[in-house]
Image (cartoon, helix red, strand yellow):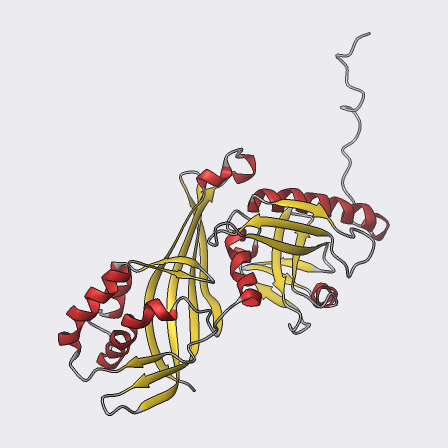
Length: 326
């Protein structure tokens, strides 16, 4: 028998339809696609949940090794959604529709919603807490699923598992000596820390970048004094979970076959107290800590059989200071 001629090559190209009649099969395909790509990105393990039985249940249960708490595994309950009813791609990431969030919070516990854009084959994620408001919400470019996602999930999940939150009970001492006189002593303490382990971001490196930024010539003297007061206490502050945590800036670029994601984090610690030379405590201060996180991974990470060895990450301090609570 001659097998050189194809039975299907001459048939017209079939285009995938997204009408209502194909919702079931498209949804099932999206779940399978999401599971495969999500597990590869996070180097995790997974199993199916209630899949297709009920929109308000769990489609996928997966776990991964915690990136900075060695020996721990994180368990993520996931709902997979696809199509325009649940989300849309935007210029700076994606928008998750209120309908998807409403289904997520019906479970009464935190849920990772993975949305599949059927047109671009891209995956996006959002970690939904039960108390979140039900409305359309915009998410940044770092919410596209990639090898960086595992670090973001660990950060989001730390909100649920947090220990001591904020700076309550921490009293720092305000010195009366001038900025110039104090810099040498404080710099010695700063260098002695080298790294600090944060429950929400892992190892934070204290480098010359932050020192130069905090004590640059154009910065106001009172702001420099604020940084000098708080620096000796960073090892006691950053081991706590912040009262509030936001990514204020996020960008990504590619170079020489690798993708780079750079984020700037703002951590707020409420409840800080300041002790003056007269032994009077000034309360209701807020400590602000800015950090820079950079993650590097291959552009074609889906094709890498040894992906874990090709991922790099580093978090460095940018600045630390405090202000009166508004």
